[in-house]
Length: 380
Image 1 (tube, rainbow, N blue to C red):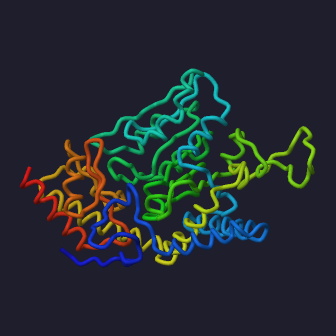
Image 2: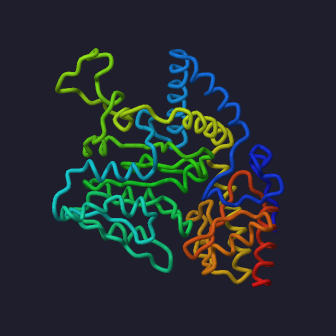
């Protein structure tokens, strides 16, 4: 087995002493440097106007860094409360008509597959394109679209299999149409390249590969998406009321465009400070290096799992890999618990085990995982 060293020392994280942490696809470990960030937030929170101004400077900085990570104009980045809200924003804001449809897959995460749940009452069809032997074909997705397809919604990386979908191919296939490409990049952002520029809406949770925590979700919105979807949530930040109106309300009131359009109220500024810090680390290391590192680990994990006789459902092609390697296991939760007893942390649920290798993992971690799995199988 070749030697793969961590890109960032596990000592940079809280609580990893004696642990093999291979579950960033569920919850990433916490950076120790965030303790200083929290202390700074506490001081700023108590500092009236000065503190508020500084918090919004962090918001601007975080917006810039997300734009850099996704290679898009930072003025098209907003911060929503969750990845689920991005899909639901589209569901609320498009001018749906009977006969319209949404295309997604039957292996999708619930917040992508079911954001459109109530639209069936309005005559809108939800097309759940089936996988083929656990893989989803971009050709099948595109072939399922037609002139009435309003949204093609997909996760860049499957939460279940770890498949990295070809978002550029989907974007090219939809070029020139009225269909919006909506991508949940939660299992891609921070570990592999996210081609946000070919999407119309791209949103990501922060508590996994981005090394942040719950409470905010960066979102890219294209000009096409902004022009086609009407805002459905309003507040002091996305309306021209302060200081233009003064104290007394009048109608009508003008709406702001991106990035405020998706931020009707104050974003979660403390959480954004944490994200801004983790983005600094990810950008310093470089997403290209992180992607290669994760795919090297993924290949090593996949090979080792197959040698143990396990059914790996993650694609073998390197460009189809992400940080997640998954295998079928009817006793996934029990396997997870048994590995925890050996201080190896993975994610096991829904009939499969997910192993996630990130920038703090090494080939030694993979060896520990495979040894622990071998013992579990021998005992079982």
